[in-house]
Amino acid sequence: MTEGVIGLIPNRVFQGGYQLGYTNDVSGGMSGGPVLNAQGQLIGLNGMLSYPFLGIRAFVFEDGSLPSQEEFLQMERLSWAVPMQRLPSATSTPVAPNPSPRQPLPPPTPPAPTTEQPLPLVF
Image (cartoon, rainbow, N blue to C red; front, side, top):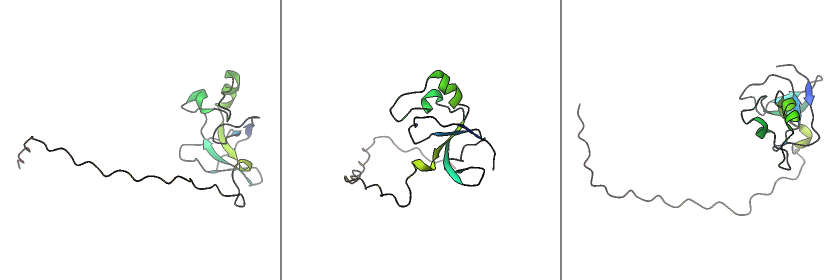
């Protein structure tokens, strides 16, 4: 377990639901892990490391806009989680399945005949 503090809760939400920036050190593979408050209550699910490889493009808001350079400099140093309020609850209406079923893949095309001779095996 690591300790940290909430560093930023922007007014707008990032694509993917991220809105909870915190100072805990997290590593790759910790996505989906819990973010707990001081009372041990689940407040979010971890999902984005600090200093993301995509740079400012990792912080696209739901409306498609990007943060200002000043905002980005504050955001990039934090790890990010989806707050629990943004996740569907067990009592929420389930998402309807895709009405158009997937089409099966066509059968593979057999390889064209070749005129090449196989190489002899030497032991």
